[in-house]
Image (cartoon, rainbow, N blue to C red; front, side, top):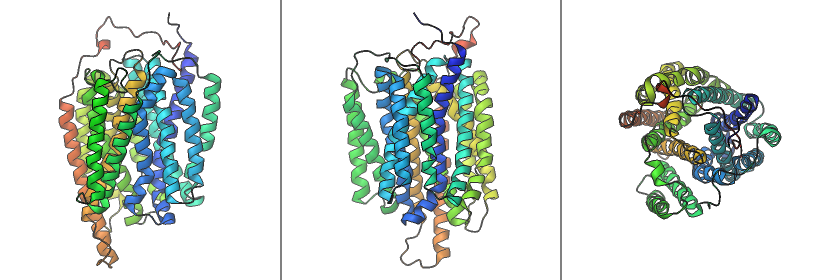
Length: 488
């Protein structure tokens, strides 16, 4: 028999869920702002520095499905707390990293910890807030907090990098992680998972992780060497084979990591495909714009971080309060159509970059882009987890999380590949202005490509099944907040 949990306890658990997401999003924005300083200290190129972000993104994406299913089987609390500890330790080792390689390794381990915490946090969220207006409203609050974390990370990253050095953008995670672990041990309910006596699909986890790593590795090399290079072509071919092997393993597994019938259910496949497409734009734009501000226009890290505040405010206000209401009134399909159109238009407005330009020329594009993304990502998550059954919380969280996470490094690699094709090689281009003009031309081409990807997102949104939500009928009532095992 399910026992209702007192409301104050649910609110506390929701705060812990938000804390886990806050750590992840603040880490992403804080490191992005610090990237130019990290590149300078280690003498790294732009494609090499991509791995500071890419290694984290790859391990998060690769381990989400495994950790989500592990939470369903062994209990969400165990995976959640272990992830917080892993994330905090890796943050410390990243802060003391003596080389670029050691920093990238720490970032990869940090990504594993983030996968463990975010996927279980969202699984807990799915269980404590039932499908309908209740969940949509809570998701709005979550998006608002994450947007605040993004803004705080951008500003804090600039301030820490300028006054204390980039290493403090890693150290800042440690006290946050320690406090969150102590609160979880004290207040988060324990217990076993929903799925009993079901083994984890380790072959599936290994193949999907290695396939993603090979894919991003090949695309990263293509950014500097071109697709014709064996360092690009061979990893991409192997990636295709490994990912095909993952699908084969899942089709024949008795306990698949990602059951294919779940993917085909309702709007799950379309929503996750759209998540992959739209987050690829965010990943590329989020990397290129700070580099343009600091390396081309010469802005400081602090000023570059402050320039992200207006878009972050849009995420905070629109994503937190407006987007859930739009989904409740118009449905996920219409919301995502508007979202993808605005993302494409906003990215197109970012193309007027110039070597001697200024940030305010790009601000309209950033604001339109942020408006589209702020209403789109809550709608994607709502559509992707609609119809989730008991015992599938970790699975649903892992699938949509993987789609979103994979989109970031893929978009980053693709847009950098396009940008690199327009960036003249150093040899024979001693004139600094010529090199700068080439870099800017590459960034312009990348923004144009991102706008076209947004058009693709619009076409995919047209195929979304916009089923009438159950709460639209008068006889539907949300269940009481049941959480006897919500935090396991």
